[in-house]
Image (cartoon, rainbow, N blue to C red):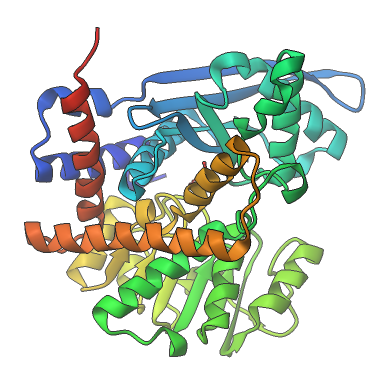
Length: 422
Ligand code: GLU
């Protein structure tokens, strides 16, 4: 592992410091926001199918709750570690502030591979984790959501465990303890596709600004999970063509275009894009240099690096994943005139529709999908407008720095008005 991959939190901190410099954030506020408020680590035993117990490690990092309850996903992956979750938690704070929704930032997860476990083991792991977190989470305090490796079913188990651990008279009132639930259990229409939908709304805004025709665009996508596949399908509906896709097991390409809907069905059945019969197998390393207009990393962090940034042909890199671009790669892309749509803006659709789900649960309502999409677009276009305006005001090229500036100014105002107490 090169230094470039050493610490995700160091990357997040460097980004934060750039934004803080731009807005002239005071040293006090810089100190306060440069660390998470709370770092919770739980080690909890779970009964395995063979009758033995295994101890798992889970995290919940609560970065900031100035603007509202801590909010963010729960990641299930063997790679989950403290440094990673701290970075992801801070990005949630900036995301919510940038979108002007009343949430703070948090992130959590369990260090394990969900695919290695039976449904029964998985359910027991998720329920025991929820139980271990106890009152560290709460419907107006800290609200988890899905992230990599977790899904709507994981959220339903968390909600049910939490609800059944509260008093009988509270049980109906705590559904909003998690978002990203199934529709039947109180989820919101449009939450499943929300992050991908948000990516496309942000791309539309960018296309309008720079005079780009999205309807004839070509696209390469790294990752065909919830975010990558929804983005691909929605872009295809708008006329764009997906020319290459990669995931954990392989990569495929077709210069005529890959049908995003058929590919989604294939991956659902086979677990990967590998072997998809209607496209050619390609070397996953070649995804980056595919001749496309738009490159969308929608998987893990630290994927666009100094090794591949020089070969990217796309006009814009769209960070559907959290933290996919290393600092070194960002410098290379900027020097090469390649635009970057930053993660804290383009992938905020998930948490925005989580906010809608939380509001619906709070008022026992069900909004329809058109309402959800309309409101999501309003929020993301306002956030995009704010980024464009600050970029002009400060005379800077980086959309990431501008996005941080918008978020930090909002937080700074509230800190200044409320003060630091006690
Ligand atoms: N895990 C998603 C993210 O990284 C969604 C978080 C949420 O809905 O709270 O933004």
